[in-house]
Image 1 (cartoon, chains in turn cyan, orange):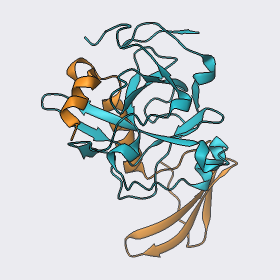
Image 2 (cartoon, helix red, strand yellow):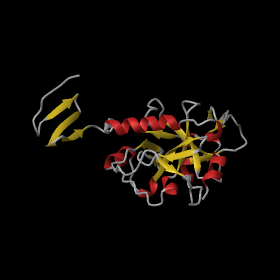
Image 3 (tube, helix red, strand yellow):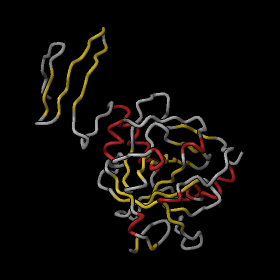
Image 4 (spheres, helix red, strand yellow):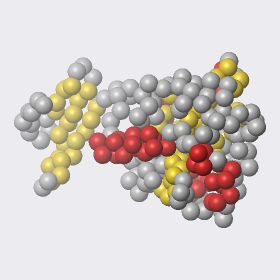
Length: 165
Length: 77
């Protein structure tokens, strides 16, 4: 199917790669379907683009890239909602907030997006562990990039369209 | 707002499938148990609000904030 996006223009998307939110991203209750796009391949970042709303896209990162000792505990409830049976079916992404001038990049470690890659369902979990902040500011990333789960993402060309106005 | 007085160990039913139990009172702290079906999300109000606001701030960056290649250049250790 063809997907309209504000940032990347129209893109062709395999419907099998659509991720369905079983619980919405908080504040975006109307939006239930997203695709994970990889555009800047040499960076650890991906884009979670809304299927339903062209103007909505989030920058996401694998939280383990920014915090090596990250140990999120997923509740039985979360596992039940997504039908998670095996740990290897789980992919985690954190939403990144980028403010420019001056640059400040923060990652939400408290409410990661949990994806069951086997059935392409997801939710934004709220971890019980209060030590993980909603705004975890990162100054540098030392770990190697490119940790967006390949199984659920789509690559798009960096030259396809530029609407970063 | 509906205001009810409850004793320790008692509960409040909201609709058919939500129950709020009063588990423990210690000074100014109250422990509450919430029984609800999975489709109903239950969070502490302030964390819920904080996450929602952060999500809204992060959605669809524009200008230099959307240039991830450049952002990455500045973050690379």
